[in-house]
Length: 107
Image 1: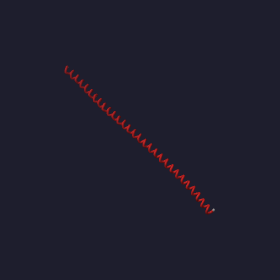
Image 2: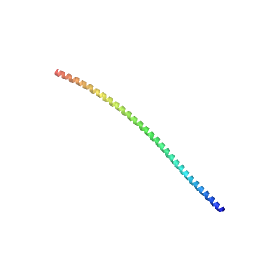
Image 3: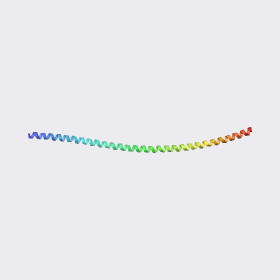
Image 4: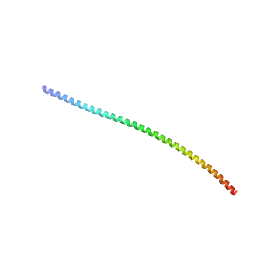
């Protein structure tokens, strides 16, 4: 009986140790998995910050391009208006000249 009790106690101890070992392994795997998960989160957050910075840079460039385009459009509109005024003055002068010539020749 002493030997049977010893074996029984030994078997229970081995089962307890084996269960404890498996729980410890599972815990280590979970900790490793959690660490990997947190590392991935950290990398994704950094990627997000980088992308947000990139978006802000692109928005700033876009605003600069739009501002420059508006300035160029204003310059072109002013140039067009000046050219139109020049052509209107020239046309008016030519009409006066034509009328003067016609009146001198037929008048």
